[in-house]
Image 1 (cartoon, rainbow, N blue to C red):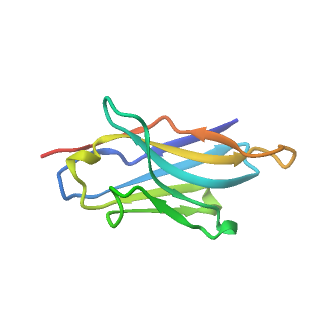
Image 2: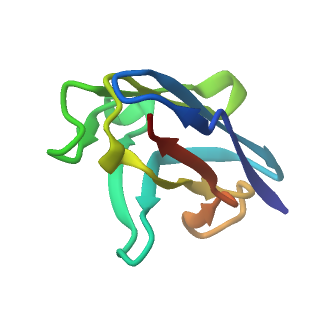
Image 3: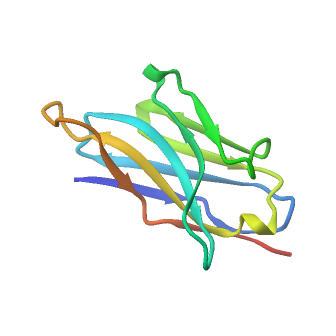
Length: 125
């Protein structure tokens, strides 16, 4: 069984910073791409940032709305992905979800997608 556990959300003033963390645990043989999504009230879930595996170059991808403000990174040894969020704006307020493509065992035929439970980020003065 695989679990993704997020942490680091909270209330921050506009212009402030937060760092989200997401640790994958359980039966894990290997981890492929990891990413962060967010969902604001009344809106669809959207991709915020993603990062490929190191073997695929560790390439990053960002939503246009967060480019230059957010940075995604990962620690492969700890199966953890981070999202450093700077210059936060009220429109960044949302529930943030971690996502990962994981191969649970060497015998698994492919990657399975897993989600964390979400962590709330509120940007308000």
